[in-house]
Amino acid sequence: MKIIRVMCTGRVDPGHVLRAFSKGTDGVLIAGCHLGECNYITHGNYHALNMVLLLRKILEHIGLNPERLRIAFMSGAEGNLYAEVVNNFVNKVKELGPLGKGEGIEDESELTLKLKAITRLVPYLRLVENERLRAHFETLEEYQEFYSSKEFEKIFEELIADKLAISQIILLLQERPLSTAEISEIIGLTPSEISRHLNNSSKQGLVKYEVNQKRFVLA
Image 1 (cartoon, helix red, strand yellow):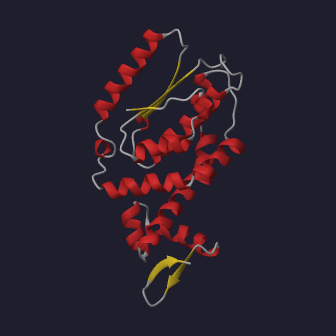
Image 2 (image 1 turned 45 degrees about the horizontal axis):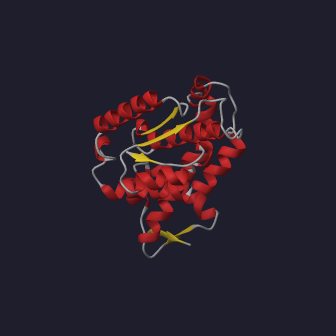
Image 3 (image 1 turned 30 degrees about the vertical axis):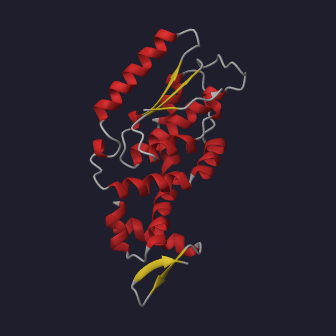
């Protein structure tokens, strides 16, 4: 488990969380003030909640259990609650097992690729969060309802899922030329999905097809 100590949860960046997972941390817990009781009157805890719910969706998308990332709200006077939350989270992480292996991802390079691909998108994720996901509700339940809604699912598929796939493809092609079938096998998407991403990336001048090698390379 990783404990990130900052003055306000609003300062916790997606990059902090992803760095922890990239270094092999099995779970990340973020604890902040109760919603509506921000010490700094910045509503940073709402920002942190948005960020955590988005990252949980991304973790699930790449095959990691979203329960590895959790946010909890409490006051500085609730020491007993803090101890209870931490103990419960530690027990949950132990139950899940080591990061990746607990989800059946045996190839460490596969997990490394997925986390690196997400990390490359952090500036973009901030933009999406600020422009499309900066919803402000009053309760935790309302946030959870939004992030499980068809509206959010549509936003995720349109703005994040495709970007994540392309990010993985670019990272793979940085290592060596690959065919559509080879990329499909590594990433776990269908050849038709990979072809669509390669075509879009080619139009953007990111990749190109080398006829002699019968493989795609970085442009």
